[in-house]
Length: 112
Image 1: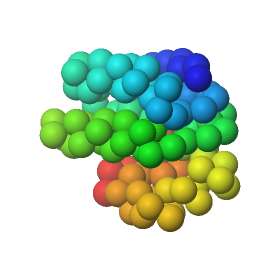
Image 2: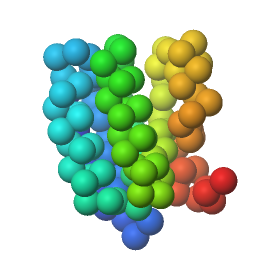
Image 3: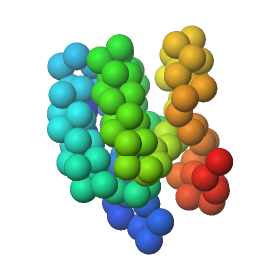
Image 4: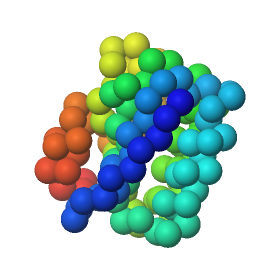
């Protein structure tokens, strides 16, 4: 798994590549905990290049969402392939996350 970060005027964009599983999710968690600790107002996690995510990866994203909500920030997910999207739908996590097709869509959205 690889994680890259890019900062724009509107958000911090985190691009994740590879597999997010029990072995790699602690690394992603450490990365996201820093952003939550800095109270980053807007975080966009791009999953376009994620091939696989398991329950520990999902838990990492849920933990980040909970942390962001505590200080009134915003977390959005983008770029899910059909397999990853199916997992979010099956677990009903698509109902608690803001999910967008692209980073541009997420950046252009207003908070609901």
